Image 1 (cartoon, rainbow, N blue to C red):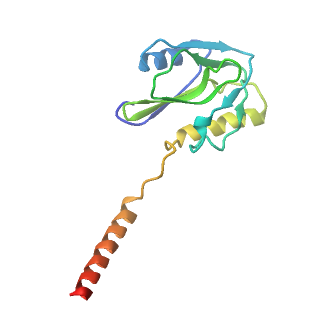
Image 2 (cartoon, rainbow, N blue to C red; image 1 turned 135 degrees about the vertical axis):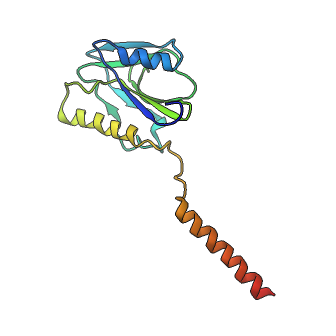
Length: 161
């Protein structure tokens, strides 16, 4: 992951093994609050301009969930947080040149088809996450622009001479 790529961890209530992996990757000191009933995760302002921007305004906490508590590293962006405590329900941390995503829901069960579908949309947003920046010009298009500019300069110089 530190050399690039993306890893998406899902909260798993049975052993919390994914949380332990995430905690060790991010340097420890985090906690997990897992349960079956609580308020929803609300989308944060950090989602604006990213692939999460068009996702649901809130994600239902379905059959089981796992909020991350404690102070997340500075290179972390929380996209959905617990409505009452502010704990992180869906976040991204950069690790080297890679991405680590945490989903508080384990995609197990519970909820309506609509609420499960909203989680699937959020998962799609993580898979296709682009950082929210301006997409670079693809190399072939950039090369054509450069050649056109150089040709234009040559034409103007010849005409001036």
